[in-house]
Image (cartoon, rainbow, N blue to C red; front, side, top):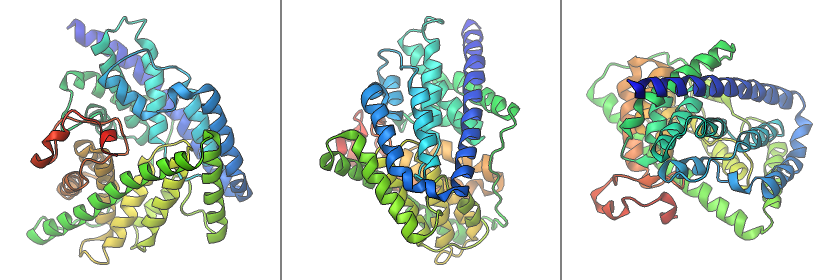
Length: 410
């Protein structure tokens, strides 16, 4: 009983703080997106914004530059308390990235803000090393659940993301309590989440299940490709440009020139309108590829934001396009791709199954589950999070990989 009361108290505080932070962040992001779309000339200033973000982290934020990987490292081996400045730094960097036209997401920012805010409770509550691990898991759950409006997926994501193939069940109560409370607080602030709708879901039969497996294979390959290419691109920027603040300048020039040359803002920002479009009609194959390129250049150059919403875009548009070859409704394939590419790129299949059910309804649950499991298995030991450790190898041939980090194989 003391355990429940203690963690309920901590979860209430985490939920209130993180839920409020997520609400403020989402409203700021909405403003930045709206302002940019009404002042497209600002995209020309993306290299300057990148330089300022780079300078901020180079001179004052080196200890928090690792971002989500710093959170994962602190779950594996808690050291000193995560500096609070991680929250305002990543907030400012992400808003600037979106305001000036970078292609990025919001999940990474929400998690880092949540982790930095919640870890400040370690001293007042006199938490030991193991309790700090639980606190950071709860913070990740709260950040994810509140920023997407998916508290169940957020809770499982927090339990699942740091160790491939295993779940830390002793953190299950704080994770669920924090995620549900944070989502509730975000809703109290009247923040609206995007709603998705799948028009038609076929009856569960042999052929639709087979087609779902085929789609899952495509999603897994896409997830592995994204994870590998973004790390490769990051290493190219680092090897070619030795002064870190100049890397986002180069990336910003590439993105800005591409936007003006193509004459469209379709592939920058969050891309929520295109994600919604993928549920309404069959989209061309190049949509997912172009979003992948824009996002990889933006994030590998050093701009801030998450990879997850771009992964939703990539997966949903790929799924919609696959309806040209796979005889399943484009809306269902878009929903499957939405969560399955994310599952493969983060190695969190259970969280992604729950997310699919929370966002699209239980009727598509089996199809979503098939796509997520196949994508997870096919993506191999790749991840957008290099500090993820392999708890259980996906294949017996790779048992030697166990207890090692993804970064060991890059």
